[in-house]
Image 1 (cartoon, rainbow, N blue to C red):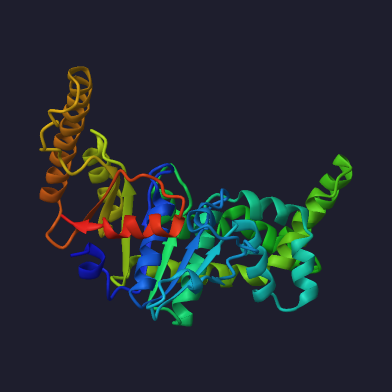
Image 2 (cartoon, one colour):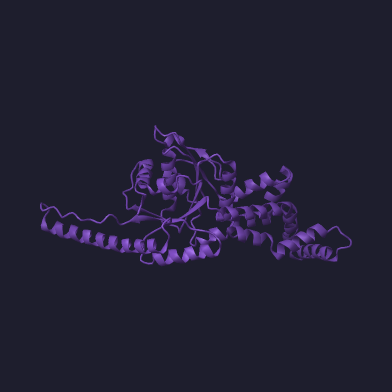
Length: 363
């Protein structure tokens, strides 16, 4: 029985997290494709500058602002499901969100043209993760899908994803931003000494440096100030989404000797933040073990070589199996553990993804 059928069939949202190089995007695409073939209305979103989701499915994506593209024509003929995918570039998605949330086109364009905004929207720590969650929130609210699969950014530390809402709120609630807001709101007041002093200081420093940096700061705060509250409220909503039991968070990982220690550490850290991890999919596993004898008709030298390969395979299989058993003992019975074996890459990418999905079995 597929572990997806038994564990995730009634779950609206699946978040795939993990370090780069573990095959996270490929597994996410496989889950989305196979659930759509099973008759579900599925949306799959990724934030990945390398365009791995589109490559995994063998399709082109015209836009990178999170707009969804229907690729249901790739599904089996008998499937009654649907599949839409989207790729999210944090900068493009943030620009689109600014336009949608701004009071009018003029104020939105003023912000988009601001030098400081261009830097912040591209470089603010946690922006990729924030935009991934913002898009997830939008899709959940639309309620047009049976399953949403979110392939998170290729991050070195999964905790960055869970910390994103708090990071954004901290950044927008920081003392520098508040001081700039106060300076802007007070600049025309004759009675607010602090505001007048701050605005005067900005102009003075701008004149000394011969640059428009501080004027840009004031314009930045002017254009963005009425959006701060919206962003902060959205970040709070994202925090609630991550805590919800309707969300399943799955780690995509490899099976190395230190895998169990790293996974236990990650799960404890995620719990400490108030969130939850619901399962693990180990990709490119060495299984099943090989028990068959070497055919006698093979020459002796070839038999020796094959024997060494089989021995190495079975040794690695044994080590990986021990890691999995230790992980199973650590987690409760409801914790999801899936395995995808080493598979030969097929020319037909859709068939390859189907093969991965067929091998996601419950242990």
